[in-house]
Length: 268
Image 1 (tube, rainbow, N blue to C red):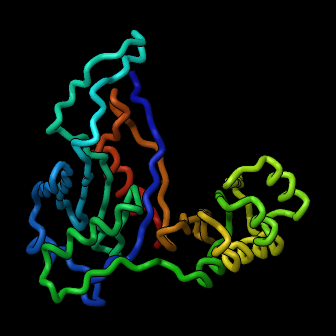
Image 2: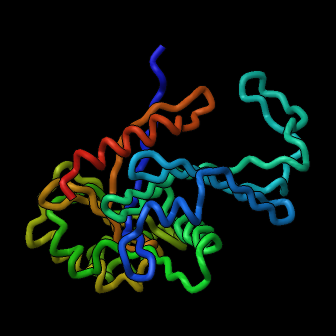
């Protein structure tokens, strides 16, 4: 039977060491291929590193033994049962990472975990080593390079939507009538080429970003390469579907194989 698939999105940033390009030999010396475990009270952090060709494959995650619900609910029998997970056991949430030493890109399936991974790297290098993850674009370069839109997601206090020039004042008043503390808007596009009118809207979002609780803009450049702006900054984007197992967990070998294939087929 064919495996089920799920969507996975990687964001890419530049990784540098002392303002120089990263080198695989330096990484192999400082971070040998292995599984590293860090425990802090009831919380565990697990990092697995595997070098292949000119790439470093990374699976990492963290989880806590507590809090722990003493019961679980069986969705098939609709009964409550004792939780089989013991008080000293944790279930780390897995994140995938890949360092491409050809280009200096660090790719992550969860950009919010970037700082924790970089912090781990720093513990393995000399304290004087400056290891930094840098945005691919700045705001001006992002706007200039963006040629097609995929999605815009915004969240804000409803009455600020008109002040941010996203919605007309009348439409913002209608939304505000629901008396919600926050409104979320999702604009999805199908191969939408950005014209002057839409470009003004995007510039307005950046000009008024202080009024938003959250902003996500994703699209593609003239080479059809993915681009992403979110709370973690400006980055490249690669998105694809990949098989999951019976527990709906991604299969690492398939994830890395498809990601590397996508990278090799791109003209960065």
